[in-house]
Length: 96
Image (cartoon, rainbow, N blue to C red; front, side):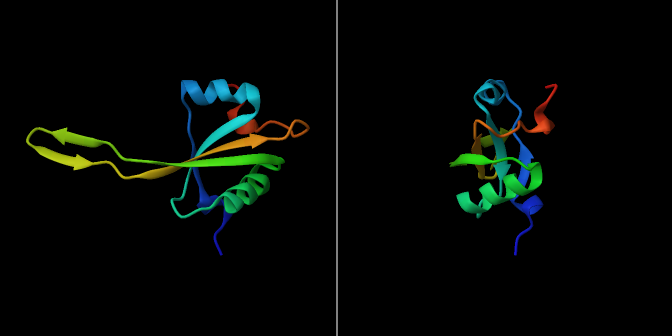
C-alpha cells in the first residue's frame, strides 16, 4: 500500500498556482501512477482538509539541448485539488 507521502511529491509554486489559491485550488506534483481517489485520500490525510474535486493532467517533458547533445526531461503528473467551501485552507501555502 502506498503512503500518502509517496503519492504527493511536492507543491507547484508558480504565478498561476498562487492565483488559484483564491478559489481554494492547490496544485501538486504527484506520482505518475496515482489516480484521483488516491490523490484525494492523500491530501485529506496529510493536510486534514475536505477535497471537493481533483483534476489531473500528464505533463510531457521538454526536449533540451546541451551543445550537440540533446536529451529529454522526464514526463510527470500534475494534480489540481479543489477544496470545499467549509474546509480550512492548507497552511503550507500561507505566507507565499
